[in-house]
Length: 249
Image (cartoon, rainbow, N blue to C red):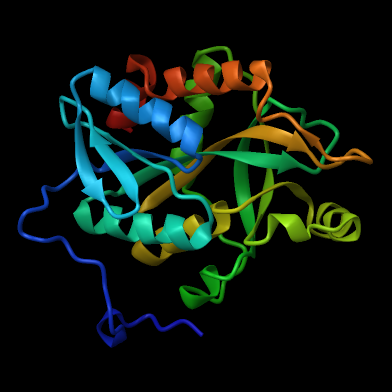
C-alpha cells in the first residue's frame, strides 16, 4: 500500500520560515512522565522550548541535541518523527517502556530492541517490510554507553501494537514461541520503518514496565523501584558522558 514517491503525497511535513533547524541528534521520550522529566531537565540547564504539534520539543543550550515527547502510539509518534526529520533530525534514540514476554525480563530491566515485528497499522503505509531493524551504529552506541556505566541490559525482538487491551494469552504465547518476541510496545516498529524510509539512524532503549509472561498481568510502572530506575536511565542518557559519546559517533 505504500508509495515511495514523495511527490505523489498530497500532504507532507514542512519547515516554516519561522522554524529553526534542530540538531541532528535527539532523544524521543514517548511516555508522558519520562518526557516531562527529560524536558524539564533540559530547560533547567538553559535549554529552550520550541513548538511541536501535540508534543514538546527542547534543544539544549549548546544546541548539540534535542529532547522531545510525549507521543504515545504509532500514529502520533510517526507524526512527530516526520516533523523532527524535516527540522533536521538524523539520529534519534527512542526511550520507552515495554511489556516482557520472557521470564528473563523483569520490571525495571533494560531492553535494547533489535528486529521489530509490525503489529501496528502505520508501518504498512511506508514499507512492505514488516520486520525492520534499528541502526547498527546507534545500537552499538547504546551498548557502549550502558557498558561504560555499569548497567546491564538484554536484547531481543519487539512487537508493536495499536491495541494493548486486545492482547490475549494465546496471542502473546504465539508471538514469543513462533516469532521469538521478547517484549511488546506501541511505537518501536513504526519508528524503525519511518527511519528506514527517510534513511536516518534510529535505535531504542526500553525499560520493562510490566511482566506479561506470568499467569496474571504484573504492572510495575507505578512502583517506586521502577520510577527510580527510570530516572537513573534518564540521567544516564542525558548526562555528559553519554552525550559526548553519541555526539562523536
